[in-house]
Image (cartoon, rainbow, N blue to C red; front, top):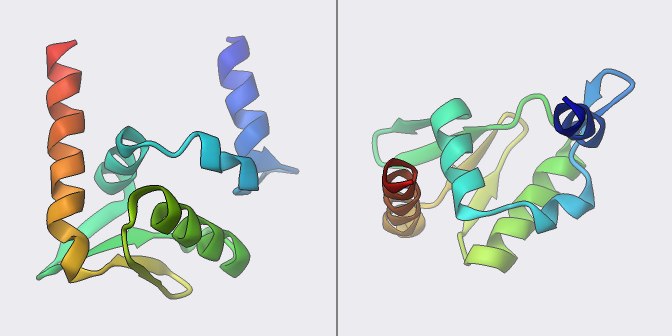
Length: 105
């Protein structure tokens, strides 16, 4: 289970979950789809991604990565990242494509 150990080392430091800048290389549409399914919620017309276990610096880092990689406009607070309404169709398309790829493979 070496791969699990390496993932744990990447995301945890002294038993505290951390987001490192090198996560930029691992953020994919599939990663976003998993985050939405695991820790996201639709409320009316917006999408919330839970970030209450991250520091403000980590939330800002994640926000910047999604803007740079995918042009997804986000608004962050201490507990959530909000995916702005204008980007929801784009994010839904990501999720549909990712989930259809899972079923094909």
